[in-house]
Amino acid sequence: MARQASLQPTEVELQILRILWQSGGSTAREVHNGLATVEAKQTNYSTTVKMLSVMLDKGLVKRDGSVSPQVFRAATSQKVTQRRMLGDLIDKVYDGSALSLVLQALSARPASPDELNTVRRMLDELEQQSRQR
Image (cartoon, rainbow, N blue to C red; front, side, top):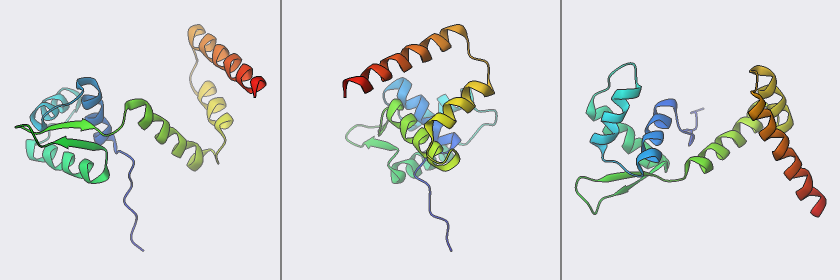
């Protein structure tokens, strides 16, 4: 049975999306130049163009063909993409349990006092919202 193509971005696609999120929109040449600064191995310009084409087919980017050269933009915001990817991770790895993910994340790497305070504030806000329902 053929494996279904993933709509999730690959690591290289995430690098391209980071460039697009930061710039707000870039030509293929600008994306290629941006990749050259973050990738250990250099890629050909034609590879960058092909990656953008694949990402266009996957719905990860949009292309403005009304200008020359064409400008590519991320189809969704960084926050929306992160939430979708995190939701998939929670479902696939943690059997749908956000609590398991949070506990694992907090035990995997030490959190700074500021990060722990942020988590406490968020928990307080979530608890307050839950009481209001």
